[in-house]
Length: 255
Image 1 (cartoon, rainbow, N blue to C red):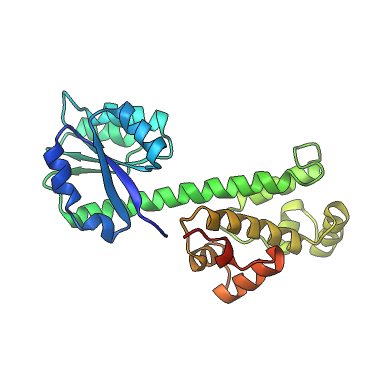
Image 2: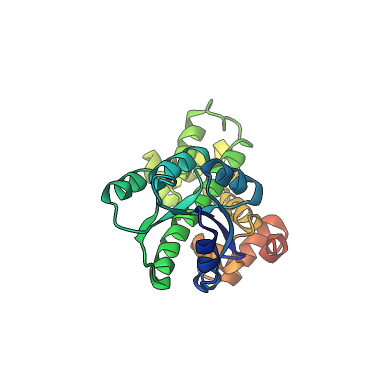
């Protein structure tokens, strides 16, 4: 992944912000502790304005109840990943926070190792959510260009369902034929008659559109997209990408 991911601290203690911000663990793992507020609504505003996708929430009742803050943020900034730090063990607050979607709940004193582990889990969740978002966008854009792609054609609708269900795996012509209940040869002829190209070319174009969206997001390196899409090598991915788009992947990537 490229670039530092921003974190907002939700705390009413500026000294704690200064203390935690000095920890090397943030930058070493691709994060930046960039802002502090003691108000959940202000945190959400900052997230939208500053492109912040992570929140470090401190549990300091009664003035700052982590469960209340987490619940409010999860409703107004659904893509935000949250970690909670509490000065002491609070099983009920912890339960409510996990129900509201926090990735981890840590009790002070918190070591940098524990923070690193929590950050890794939060980032994995965030990356998966972003990959899913780009996949859905690519799916919607790709099928909107097909006749019957908006649901009027049963064959195209079933094809869309197949691709939608296949995120994270590679769909072969054989697998697609099995999904439709046909043998490979008959499915190949039917598909070309209905869509105008082979299933292999159709699926290749979709995967490259998905790759384009991942690269343009600025969050991925070329080799990461190649691995994510299951290509055998970066060179092969580059060759396929250039054949479909006329450009190398590095020409689309944001720096």
